[in-house]
Length: 204
Image (tube, rainbow, N blue to C red; front, side):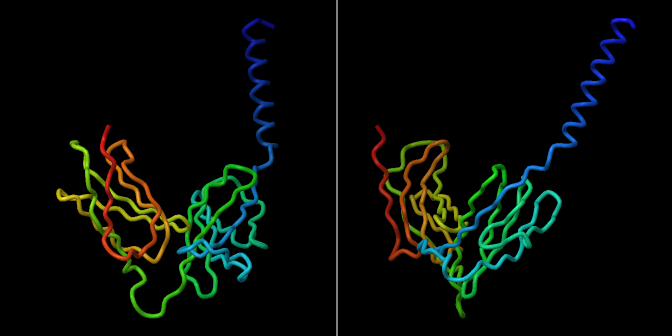
């Protein structure tokens, strides 16, 4: 057997056994733990009643794994990316994207109390940013829910004013940023008692 033929045989055997090994490797699966809290204040809902799962769908193939949920745990969930929707009696549904890349994954979902009448999305944040440093970059304000998935953005106008609308009663962080810089970050409750005044520290 020539040297070239021997080399081709070795490479062929390597590829064959590598493929066989991959084919026999079991699909990686995880346990996904679910924790529910009240979105506005973080109060624990685990002892209130069992969570109700609307769906837990793979964003890759659309398969729904909701039936694998028992005792606030999803079992044998293949690694991947999922969309989760969950609710409890007296609370609006909460939804999260869940990335499963470890054997154990924790997911915290904040649920807002249900409302009767009125517009639950009437919450707003308004105010002014003072001492904005001179720059060609626009200044932005973002609200991010601490326990919920609420996010709201506003561009600060030439007078330093901003308004974020479409929020619910919530608790989270207000971030002032420009370009690559975080100018200010602070905890906040929605709604506020009135317009906010954010005094940025003097630039050194």
